[in-house]
Length: 285
Image (tube, rainbow, N blue to C red; front, side):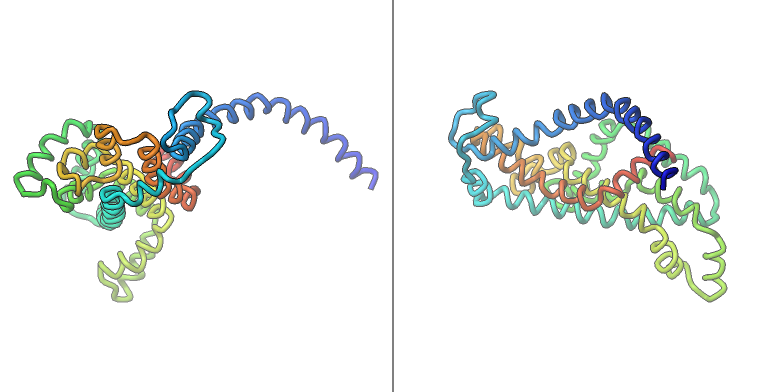
């Protein structure tokens, strides 16, 4: 017992030195966290003060709050419709991006066909082209097909995601070929191998990509704004921008922003570990 007690006492000075050494870093992280959370705090607080002049810093510490701005937001004709449009745009795009990326990743990782490497690296090279350079030809092409001011015209250009395909290919490349060979010996076809072997093995990367893709589409602004001119077809990000032009009360705009923020916050909370893993995998690959 005495030796164990001695070891514990000897560890305390080392632990204290480690704590003191890390204290400045912890304080810095706390300051960064507070600065990061401040805009969200201000957004919520302002949304709870409808009809009151905004004065800084007094408005950041209100004496009374009201949920009238949220009631006005939810009773509006356009904002719930915009929320539904955002949900359709994000969920449908996420589903098809994962489907097509997993199929393409499987083909590029495990299949042998003429020009495979060249096609793959041409697709990867397209990632270096700034998105803003392709937005005009994309707009013209969708317009010639009659897709402007339609949901499918907003959805279809977003379904082919080269970054998702690249990550799926890198992940599937690590699946042992012996699993696929054993399935072929048992008489499994290509679709059965893809559905029963490849997809179950890719659940971690699929969850990671689902988080990335959903957040990207829910917060997307440029393409939905360009492709949808009708107010009924707007998504929340575009709709909130139009509210500022219509001189809607600031509390109502902030309430709509809070409602828009909640789904992304919940997705991030539930899939946080996959999100962090995806950042790590993106750096490693």
